[in-house]
Length: 141
Length: 150
Figure 1 (cartoon, protein in one colour):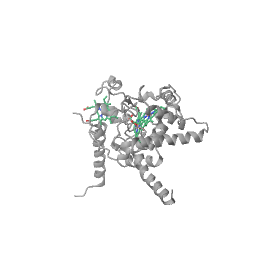
Figure 2: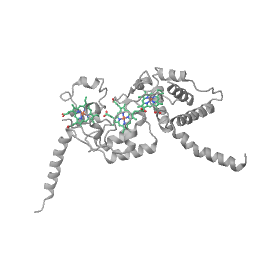
Figure 3: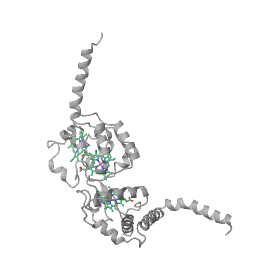
Figure 4: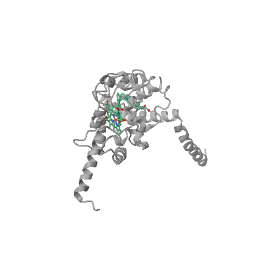
């Protein structure tokens, strides 16, 4: 390829990126890639994400964080395909992407809620591995 | 006629006396909350409360303790905390006597309006209410700042 056509191809790719990211599957892929990159940086033996581990995180009765929120299911309910309820009585739309297609499309929202909810339930932040596992679980339901 | 200073003073005192019992009954309406950032960030777990429901000192307490927000982590980036606090404080309700509480449900007027004469105790734990903080369960127009249900 001539340098100019390589440059043109690169430019075309760059122009296409925002379009890709604007679609929900594209945005989700970018977020999951980010988790994979961080998981690999933390552990060179990283072997990809596992939805079953994500399910275990979601269903576990941890009780390691704040006393009123021992589990993810405290607020989200036992089935991510169904709505949950906050402790203040407000409905939470289902986490399953098949029911709520906007899930895992805004990186700031995803980061904010993982940060808060993991601290409330586990008493610590979730690792990139755990976040990717959970996202894989909620995306595959 | 010139108003003498003592008379002016007593006028102020009379106005204050008139004003405080009225507030002990609770406001029927408070101005709606329009700020989009506060509506979004403070409206995901419960209704975004109108600034007029708490005095400024109480809002400052709420915003200083977001990492342990009534038993939950509600952490926000520092610049958002500052922006939200500015809105809440600038539109806050009248200051109250005594130690400020971060809870609306601990304000004197609120406890008075929601005592056993007005609300049957079992209502608080009913499945459609679940929490005192669930204002919309009993006040259908609470999101608009309208608590006058008659």
